[in-house]
Amino acid sequence: MASGQQERSQLDRKAREGETVVPGGTGGKSLEAQENLAEGRSRGGQTRREQMGEEGYSQMGRKGGLSTNDESGGDRAAREGIDIDESKFKTKS
Image (cartoon, rainbow, N blue to C red; front, side, top):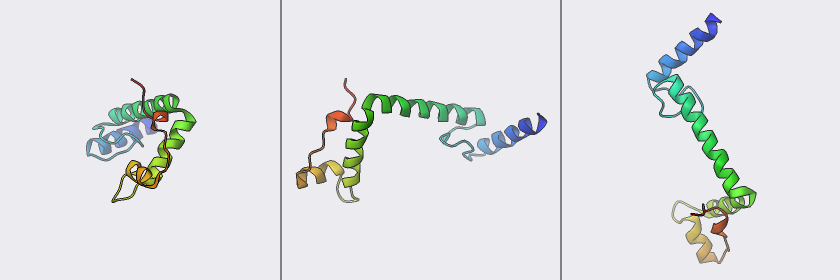
């Protein structure tokens, strides 16, 4: 029990020094803050996945795969005549 508490104390110290100790917890100034950030980001991603569905992610990935440093995926798709259905991955208002 003491070793778990000791480990959390060490992680909290590292977090307060600016180190990311929890995956997805970037920006948190303490261990608890990083844990909360990671959980919130995960929930946000799950909600977005439910909104878009598999087809939406497929269309978004297709557009992203066309992007380069010089040109966005949307611009390249338009230039090359590639059809990307953006309605599949945009949140409806």
